[in-house]
Length: 233
Image 1 (spheres, one colour):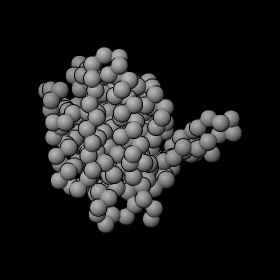
Image 2 (tube, rainbow, N blue to C red):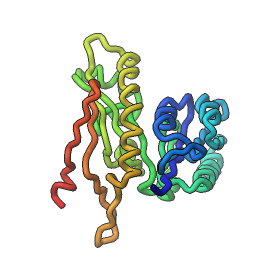
Image 3 (cartoon, rainbow, N blue to C red):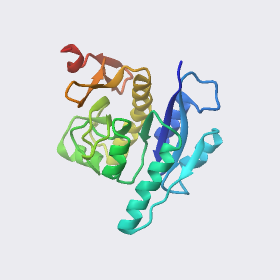
């Protein structure tokens, strides 16, 4: 099996990064194909950096300075840092910096993120309290490709979590996080296997081609739903 290299960006403890490392391992391990080539953080004190190093994974810290010049330099430095590991896929796992359009275009169709709601509902911040306040019966998390619009890229998989009577933002967040740790590695596995990929069309644009959209429920049941795009091929 050919190598499939992941670079993970974090800002804090990196619990999703840990789940991915536990699933795929590092380049130093005898793991077929998919592995974590590097973990990069914008914070030197990020707890996840220590964990990655303990697993034999290369790490890098790229910090941002204040102001417009700081933003531009940060984007340039981050592109160089990620490029140095030649990733097949760039994974945002609790990375709290806003990625600039230049960065997204440079790694176009190679960046995925996990968001703690059932997109397209509740984009942005404070999603758990917003979901509770709305009276919704369910929430969850979504893995999606990253584009230049916030939380608006193509959806690759979702995990559904019921909202219980009396839930707080904290209790709901805790249950959703457990599903994030299951869903994120599963979607990465499907991308690495080629079951989720980009197809270039005759007009030069790209469309997502996937054999199935992944849906997980809190009771661990996995439902594989044939995507509309594949059904119409």
